[in-house]
Image (tube, rainbow, N blue to C red; front, side, top):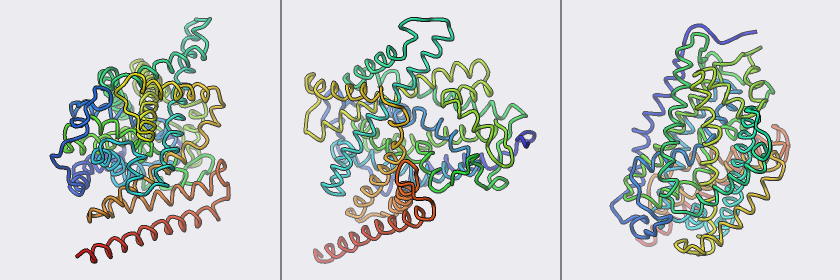
Length: 493
């Protein structure tokens, strides 16, 4: 048995951390200059309605955006990713800088440029009517699934804590807490964005950051914990032998790139006073999430036993559920304070992502059916059926609800990157900053679709070449669009 302990050789970790922070200032600025934000009137000013279009200060938008896109994603996804070993650091770092932050930035800024519309409408503008309908359906399905799962999970944890305290009766019934959380979702989805989300979510965003910093400090001050170096452990350490390509890239979504983020970014796009806030709010929000994911991945790699080069110890902890794993990491690194923070994290963070998921679903439907949301009755018309769907799905098998989430999530990210590429192409700007991650995510998504047991389950010999060929085919379609655009431009000249 081999246990990581002794000297703190954390060169890999700090290199990745420096790259993430530097990426915000260097590559993030490059992306921002490519888009070229200006002083035009934003949707928050032009369409101010006191409900969804409300001007908010930059610092508050940053924290709300971070909490909206994060939740438990960069925590649990990173812990799951740590099963593959420190190689996951490379995906979190490179994925965040070159793909995830670029994806979040363009999903937000293209919403701003198009009146604050939902991401499905943005994709329709640049990819056509067919993709518009595909994105509408996928977005609503994904958002309702996320909102529901992020109600069922916290409800179950609350019941566990209540029972440990010796409480019985209705308070120990998960059905009761499910309806309580869905009731809160209804209120948060229905009310003006600055009534609940704008007021208390910045505080929860700070809690998310403090929890990550506490975990990092706990690793460094305990000589028993050592973050392994990438170059000394550059292998697949997953205890089940699950391949890195493309499962790791699907598993670690929110900590690198996630299509869910593109459904959330328009929420803040409707609150920006100036386009120049986009670099911090969208690109910076994703970099902050990448840092959080890197810390939690480091915790997963350093706190648990490695046997025969495999992450056996972490696998045992994760087998007890995501809440138990987060609780264990916090208690190991921060003691009693960590337990309190863990309870806040595993209960509050998913709830705060769940309610904004339902809110985004309402806005996607509102854009779809052209329904203004400034009137009480019109919001009620969409909120009731959405929460009704959530209540129905909440009583289904968790594994069935979650089975197709990962693939849909990363497929959304792929589509958004292609939409951004078409925008840049039309504007005659450097489209390679979105095309490269778009091709990569196309290969990831298509390969997973052919490989995963819940999809076609064809095995690596078929899935790998098929996924890459399809990604190349999509790239060729884009190149044809490029040639057509250049030809039309020359004819106009």
